[in-house]
Each structure stands twice: as C-alpha cells, then as structure tokens.
Length: 270
Image (cartoon, rainbow, N blue to C red; front, side):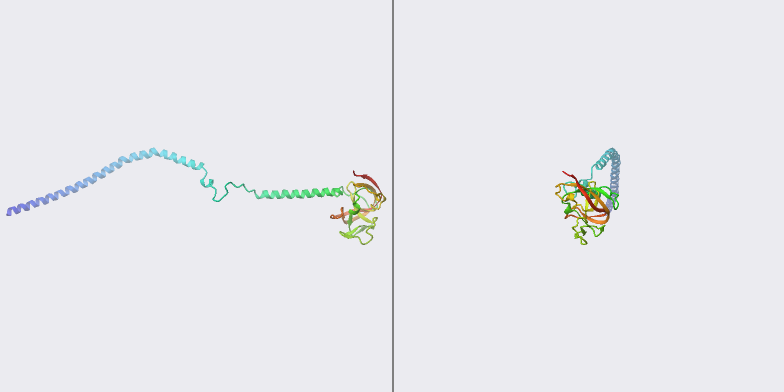
C-alpha cells in the first residue's frame, strides 16, 4: 500500500513535470509563429514597394501632362463669372455712355451756331440801312455835299430819331423814346431831323427831305433814290434812331447832321 501510494505520488510528479515541459513548448511555438508572420509581412511589403514606386514613376509624366493641359485650358477660357451677367440686369449689353467732354463739345458748338446766326441776321438787317456800310466820310461843318438817299414812300412815317439835344437849331422829332419833341414845333419838316442812308451805306441825320418840291407829288410804289445837296451843320453826339414805326430803336453816336435842298429823283427800283 505504501508502495502504491508512493508509486502514485511518483506518477503524479511525472505528470506535473510533463505538463511543465509542454507549456514552454507551446509558448515558444506561438512566438515563433508571430515572428514568422511579421517576417512574411515585411517580406511582402519589401516586395510590393519597388512595384508601387515603378508604377508611380510610370504614371508621373502622364499626370504632369494632364495638369499642364488643365492649366492651359483654364487660362484660355474666360472666367465663368465674367461670362455671366448680374442677376436682374438687362438681357443685352447697354451702349457705352458718352464721356462728359462730348456733351460739353455739343453745347459749345450749339452756342457758336446761335451766336453766328444772330450775327448774320444783324448784318443782314444792318445792310438794309447801311448800318454795316463804309466808314463815315470826312465831312466838315459848313460843307455842302451831294448825297444819293435811298427811300420808300412810307419812310415819312417810319423814320424818326430821339434826342434831347440840338445841332444849329435842328432837332429830332422825339426828346426820348416815346416822348415827342416839346421845345418847338415837332411838325416843322425843315427843322425836324430823321435818319437816312445813302445808296453806298452812309448814315446821317437830315431835315427838309419831305418838304422838298421833288417829293411833294406822287411817289413811286417801290424803293427809289433822290439826289440832294446836304448842308453839314455838325454832328449829333448821341441819338436813338428808328427805321420802322412800331419797332425798336438803335443808339448811335456822332452822326453827321444838317438839312437838304435841291433834291431830284434819280432812280427807281423795279
């Protein structure tokens, strides 16, 4: 009994030893397996790396070409934002606005045209009575000169002058515009001055034209001229003259003044 017990005890010891010997062997096997797996993975990675690098080197030129082509296309094509019109804007492109200088140029041109037209009109009106005629003659006080006076039959009512002064007793029919002469008889034709023009455009003030016998009868229906002797009495310093009744007055200075005589009809305009 004692021997069996000892034998049993001896058997149990052998089993424990056997168990202790097997555990190191399993753990070693497991460690060896992990090492082998890591080595295989490392070997796989080492085998794969050269292939990937070769593939990337093969595709690198193609990628660079595609990138360059994309950059060229982007620079050649207009920006999408520039091509689109703002929301709510007109459907077509508005015409460019003219610069401010263009409007100023048109205004200056219009002003020049208006001034030129007015000047031309004044010249035309003035030429009717010789207002833009030749320079004044060099007559002197006391001279007697021949003058060809241009007239129409209505000039007796239309022609008038206004001035508060006198020249050797000769005076205008008005003291001022709208005020008749009050210092003496305003109906005295031999003393009442009126404005006249010669056929050459010389302007002067004269009395006695309508009281001369040459104009006492029936007068021509159209414009005519009479040749008279003008007795120069001096100059009227300032006066307002009227060429048509009911129209405006023109201010004049230093017009020769006198009376006429020995008139005769010289020409009739047809």
